Image (tube, rainbow over all chains, first blue to last red):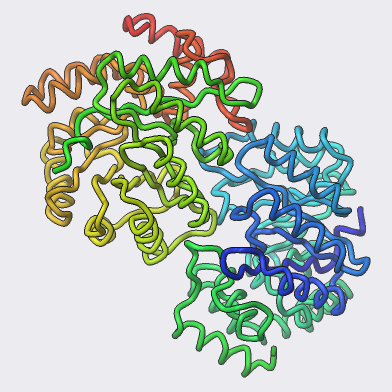
Length: 300
Length: 300
């Protein structure tokens, strides 16, 4: 197992200001994650709006992330609709000094399993950097089968698989993770995403948490991760349940991105309206609810 | 009603060769459509792989389309994930001399109705060019409500709505088109897409056909369009039924794009493997079936 791809990987926003990357805000987020002790930082994940940024913006963000992570390993999202664009982003990540790349099979035209396999093959043949397989059907609309996980995980260079949320029932979660574990090589780590199910996923055998909330509020994410991986599942569950009002907002407001952006804006970590248009973000009434929960839970 | 946005709008592929736009092949397709008598050419639609091309490639394709359409009106697809990118594509379309722009709400993060409305407002405020609202849930994963059609269609500058396929039953198709017609201003045309239902849609009251097959095989698409709009629905249906083996392949092979690319390659209108990777296109066995049908129907 590659231990760089374990523990808490925190996904910072890439805040915008006047339709340009707000470099000061981004650097502040990265420094905050490194100072808090995240095991890694994944810049330009879905939370980091990679899909919305131009190649030169992405190259710049990758460099800033590595420069300001203070030795914490940095993974860079390299997804794009066209294979040649992906390879160019991989080269930017290499030039920045990334410790790995995160690749989601973005789609416009739906892709076949063979299309996606060949994409991962092209990337692993193009770089020495370890590759994280990014399974995020909510944004890519591509659903991996367990068989495809297995095919891709056998490619040299694949280091980890970022899976969507696991079942809420601990036994079912353990069976789900075990079924994936059984099909992929031992050295490939399995990381859970879907913040609401992270405590369950880590306690069910996942090696890592690829975390949205950890990119803005690293403290509680580290608490959950350490408890689960140190064999204190009840402590992990307790901290996750304390954050349940946030998970409820993720569900109610159509996902995590708009909520974490509102949190970052409320805490002064990003300017207002920091998401790329046409994503307008939450309404004022929704923001008030988010701020109230952040303050009540003492997350500020 | 704006008559430029009626009749057959033919959507050419943007064939690639060695991961670059195959300009000779693209020009050949555009000239073929103009010579055949298409009422308009829509370059850089979904069939034209707009989502996969870099801004400079798209600007070049827009210029080539207008230059080689011989006076046939050219519409240009301007969709992108970020509003500022869309506006830049609109400016390229204006510079090229386009007669209109086609805008699909591309998504990575799912969009709200307000997000999409504001995107269309930003575009209509940015340009004097007429705008075609592009509703293609199979690629954008955004579903327009009839209410949203109505809100957007009232924006100054909106000229047409490209709707997905209509119900196969003629009465239901007429009711469906009438329901949309009732909510949008008189001057906004309604164009059907989903080639298999084009004859039904045109006979049910649609003003235009935004046609995939028409971009590669304009002849039969013109036959269907003229028959339907001249009040000969049985002739339109007969020609559409003659092409049913193609519609069946669209359904079997996951959409129209891979099939029309194979047709263009079979007819020597594009080099082999002309789609942008990671889209590999059809397998050899699938291509053989496509070629057999094209030859049997005398479409070469």
